[in-house]
Image 1: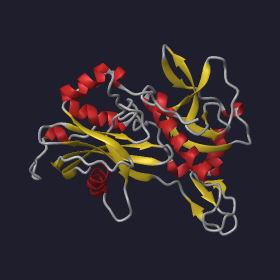
Image 2: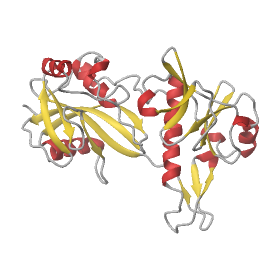
Image 3: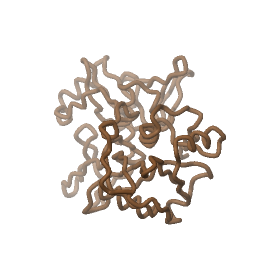
Image 4: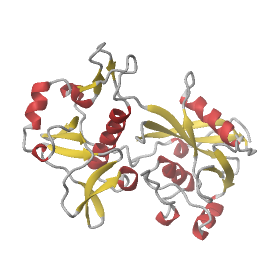
Length: 319
């Protein structure tokens, strides 16, 4: 295939409404160090609080659709660590990092991976932010310079070492995820070695020091599948806070479609035409990523339409 392929304008248009990139609440970062304002809002009866525990938060299902269960500040423990999530139309939103919360019988703890695609825009934004910060706080309780226990400051958006004053901020790990296409417009999908047989997705990997995201696309595809890539087109990004990734989504075009999997990360890789993928999914020999993943949207962009829900693999939630 020629390396000078020129993707169409449709191929270059950005993906819209990615499941975990739909927040509407203003993060209002300028209030994070305003202790007077934060105290006032915590005492405001209109303020709403989301409990979060790793990747889970409480929700109530209304007609089968999840809605986050938000409570007043008075309903949560004063000892719980809290994070300011943002402000919208006179309402301040906080998260409390907690292991438990007394819930009504019709409310349950749900995982962001499971409900992320079903939440409304406001709730999706609140939960993805709360989950990301909760993971960060749990993973970084100590100062990386001296080992002293750090303190939560700046409304939960910083941890400060009381010994040397060093300030620690939440970090996001850039990662690429890519659907590769060949000269016949087939899609390259792979199966990780730890996945069940028949589970396929787009290729992905972390951006390494000293490289651009586009270089990471070419390197990861070559390392995992042996396929060589030329043209690379960015289509959108989505946070993936499990624990701290930001996924940069791409389509790329192969210059050499020969497959030679690494056998370590990727155990199997195949080229699929649209008809071949549909047939495999319909017969149950292939399952694809769920709707919450940007991988699903990259596949749908190539496929030309939304994929049936029963083509999705089960969502794996760590215990």
